[in-house]
Image (cartoon, one colour):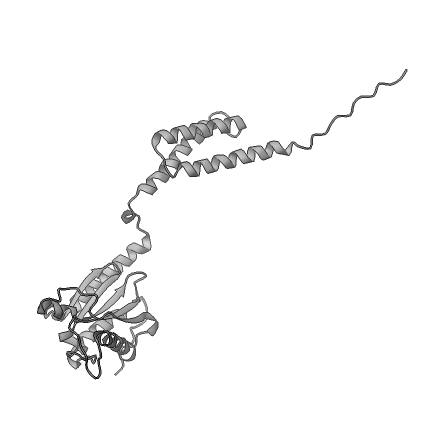
Length: 265
């Protein structure tokens, strides 16, 4: 009697497609969450979380009560993302920003105490700007009219400023400013040269006389184009003729060890 041959079983080489499809589905769900988090409200979050829960249940990813837990976690995560997006930037402050602000406030307080006589005489003023703390040196207290040479009588005030700043690790920009009255002499052809020369002279003194590291300093001349008062009146022009020492905010750290550099004769 002839034996009946059984048909050979066919080996399925495409079973990997099942796992691949599951992976693609999960990846799609992940990108749906990212997209939905850009524009989200409470109802949309609920519908999205329910859809993800249903998809995961069908895939067998979250059996039983784990699906409810996953749904709640999805809602919490998406709502947290939305709250972070709606948080005003002014309230999102890093720890190093707070420390820098505290150091800048302490530095301002110390400078105001040290320069109290000059502030009363109105030859020096302090103000805060977005870039940092500005020490404004008025022309009448520090320079002769049309000259870039510092007055000898101005050295005590400059020494106090240098001593305080030398105890800080911070960057400093020296800015020269003038009023809008044109100047044209043999040594100073224009307000551009005058403002730049005064800023450069102050930088030179801070390096040579007070031992500042050159890497901390920069000089800029703005002529009459950055006024702080009205050039139409004499008092306003006097305020605009100035050299500003700008202590740039960002990583202002008092030196905790060592003595400040000694002033050079």
